[in-house]
Length: 294
Length: 307
Ligand code: SF4
Ligand code: SF4
Ligand code: SF4
Ligand code: SF4
Image 1: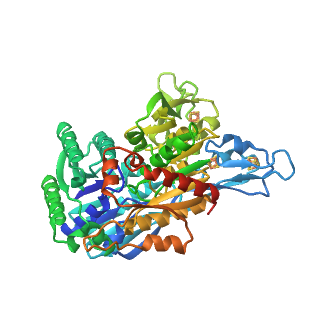
Image 2: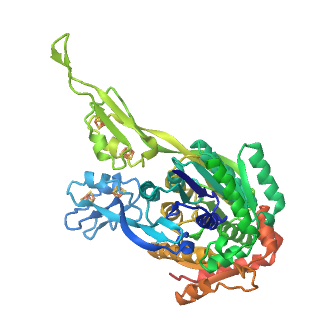
Image 3: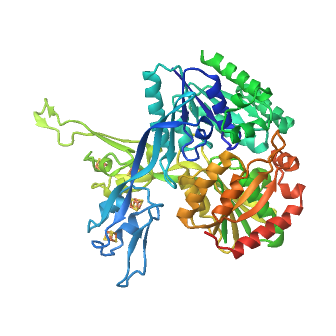
C-alpha cells in the first residue's frame, strides 16, 4: 500500500481541487483530508459520515477561585502569559487563566501551594470516517482556536491506514495543509510521494522553494505541478527551470479554467464536471505519479 | 492601532491587502506605519515591499540540558513534562562483584527530545538537584528593516521546524506601540493564527466568492468572535468569471449581510491585478485609484468597532 500527499506551501494554489480530481481518477483508495484547520475536501466529496470521534488532546488549567489566595506564584512560572492578576494587592484581586493562551504545560498546577489549579482535559476537535462515492474518506475538524493540529493529522492518518489495511486498498491519497510547519510535517512523514501544487507567481516560487527544502529534509520523493500556468507563462518557465536545476520532477502544468470553480460550486470534482483540457492535464499528472509509485 | 489581516483559506489575497493597505497609508501618514509579517512558515510581504533589511536576529527557544554530574536520575523531570520531551532511564541497582557492595549511584541517562519541547520550564523548575539548565535552540530568524517610509519586520521559520508560535511571539515583540501596525497573519484557524492576531484592535478577513472561501470564512469568523476582536471582510476576486458567463456565487455576500458583517472592500477579478501580483508588484503601483480606497477602508475601520 502506498501513500501520496498533495501539499502546496502557499495556500490557494488548487491543492484540494487536484486532490478531489484524483478521487475520481484512482481506483481502490482511501481519501484523507489532513488540512484539519481549514478542511475543504468534504465540500467536493459529499461524504456520508459513518463514524464520529472526539479528538482529545492536551489540557487547560482551571483555577478554583475558592481555594486561590492570590499569592501570584502561578503567574510567575507561566511562560505563556496565560495567567493574569487583577488589582494586585487589593482585597478584590483575582487570578485568571486565559484558556486560549494556556498551552496546558501544567507547571502552574504543580507550583500552586493551595492546590487551586486543576488541569482539565479539553476536546479540541472531531474526526470522521465517512463513505463517499469514491470510497472511504477519513477527515477531521480541529476545534476553533485549538492547537495540536499535528497530532490530529497523525490520528487521521493512522485511521486511514487501518482502513486501507483492512480493506486491502492500494493507495492512500492525502490532502495536506499549507505552510511548512507542524501539521505539514505530520502529513509528510513516512509518505511514498509528495505532489506540490504551485502557481506561476513570485510568491508561489518562493513558497515552493521552502516546501521543496522541507520534503528534501524528510527525504520524500517530490513532484511539482504548476497550476494555472497560463496566467503568467514567464513565471511558469522560471518555476520549470528551478525544478530542472534542482532535480525536482515536474509532473505537469494545468491551465487556468473557470470549469474548476464551476465544478466547485456544483459540488463535483472537475473530472466529473468537465471533459475539457484541464481534466486531461490532471489525468496526465496522475499517470506520471502512478508510474513512479509502481 | 493594530490591524491584522487574516483568512481561513490560504491564497485569498491576505498579503495583497496587507501590503497595499500599508503602502496606501504610508503616503497619508508618513513615518507611522509598521508592517509585521507573522506568516513565518511562508513569509511573502517582503516580495512586494522589497525592504532594506538592517537587522537579522536568530531566534532561539530555551530547551533543557542536563548537568550529568548533579543528576540522580530520579525521574521528576519526566513526570513534569506533559509533552514527552524528556525521558529518564535509570540503570537498575547492581551489586558490584569486586567490592561486594551496592553501587550507590547506579547511573542512567536522561534523553531530551528538543523538537517536542515547548519550553515551559517545568523540568528545570522542579528538578530537585538543580541539574537542568536551559540552552537556546534556534528555530528561525527575524528580519527588521524599512520599505520606503514603512517599518518592516518579518520572521522566517527554519525548515523542518514545527514550533512556529514562539517565533511569531518574537516577531510581535517588535510592534511599536504608537504606530499603525499592520499584521499579515498565517492562514488557517489554529495556534499560529491565534498567536498572530491576538491583541489586535481590528481584524480584516480576506475571502473569495467560492464554496471553499465561504467555508473557511465561517471558520475564521468563529475564531475572531472567540477572541472578541472587531472585524470586517474584504472580498477578493468578486465576479470570478465562469465559463457560462455567470458570476454565480453570491453566498459570501449573503452570509455577510445575514451575519451583519461589514464588507469593507470588494476587489474585482482583474487580470492586471493578477499579473502585478504574479510579478511581485503591489497593485497600488499598477492601479493608483486603490490608494484612496484603502485609505477610505482604514477610516471606516477607525470609526467602527463591529464584533
Ligand atoms: S498550564 Fe502552563 S500555560 Fe497553562 S496557565 Fe498553567 S503554566 Fe500557563
Ligand atoms: S499559585 Fe495558586 S494560590 Fe497562588 S495565585 Fe496561583 S492559583 Fe492562586
Ligand atoms: S529531575 Fe533532575 S535529578 Fe531528576 S532525573 Fe531529571 S534532571 Fe535528573
Ligand atoms: S521545558 Fe517543559 S516541555 Fe521542555 S522538556 Fe522541560 S518540561 Fe518538557
